[in-house]
Amino acid sequence: MTKRSRKTIKDVAAAAGVSIGTASRALNRTGRVSEATVIRVTDAARKLGYQPDAIAQSLRLKSTKVVGMLVTDLSNPFFASVIRAAEKRLQQAGYALLVGNTDNEGTREKFLIDLFQRRRVDGLIVGPCETENPEMLEALDSGDLPVIGYDRDFGEGQSGLHVDHRRAAYEATRHLLNLGHERIALLSSSSLLSPGRERIAGHAEALAERGIALNQALIRAHKSSMEFVASEALSLMSLRPAPTAFLCLGTRMLAGTLQGLQQNGLKVPGDVSVLAVGDTDLARLYTPAISCVTWDLDLVGQMLAELMLRRLGDDQGEPQRIMIPTQFIDRQSCGAPGQCSGP
Image: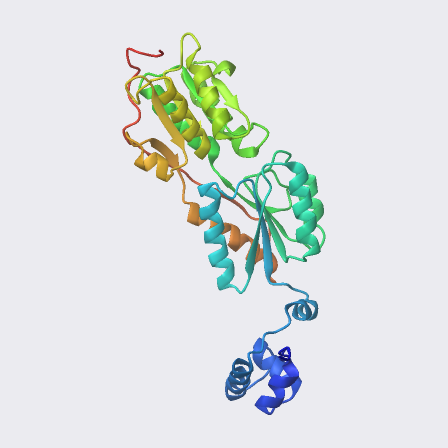
């Protein structure tokens, strides 16, 4: 059996009875080509099973039609929803999305950035990481690689998007304070990350308005593994007096906290109130359903894609900074401090 030869643009042109240049313009929808010729060339390409050479095409057009995106954790439902929405919008504009997982490690982020550059992606969307270096992103952006920052520090001359994490934590803390809680445990991602810093600042702001000092013993901010959070929840409940409410700033933070409280035999909200920043299936389906502050994940993905498409277009304009607002959802997991604040 002989190996089937790959069809070329020359074969398509011959089958359609046109020149190679005309066939190329018809397939790429560039230049002056009649609609009848476009139909004839397209039909010939389809019958021959012709597939354009992506490498040759990218060299000719100086574009791979691929955008890279780096996030800390692909298994996080927040990132998954954002990626899906961004990919949909980019696909509508003729771009593919190539996603990398940094595991919140600076060395891995650098490796992936280098890899994406070698793959000649047209642009890069960069999410938070353990070491956020605005100068690094500016250096990338000053060359041939447009960079959009997502929930991380980026340079003055760059476009980017932030969720209003400060406001989210502020509103969540204020809700618990209004119920009478003063000892509020806060579990967050690393304070080295932009979202973590903003959430702690919003929490502190709400406490300060009531004349309550920020208690560092009640704040646990590290890498967000569920095992770490469960042990931290148990550690917090061993304090005397114990916290009467838990503010969980992330998906795994909520899961780990609920696991730790369950191991301690504590009921929500009878013994302790729980409030999450970010809405998930767990928050909605847990019994009782968990109150939360959330935001439009699809909008985040769409806006990141729009920012990138604007950078890739001819009319770039001034750098754009987008702030995504949050909203509070009141469910059944919060109440006034109960009689029991610990085991």
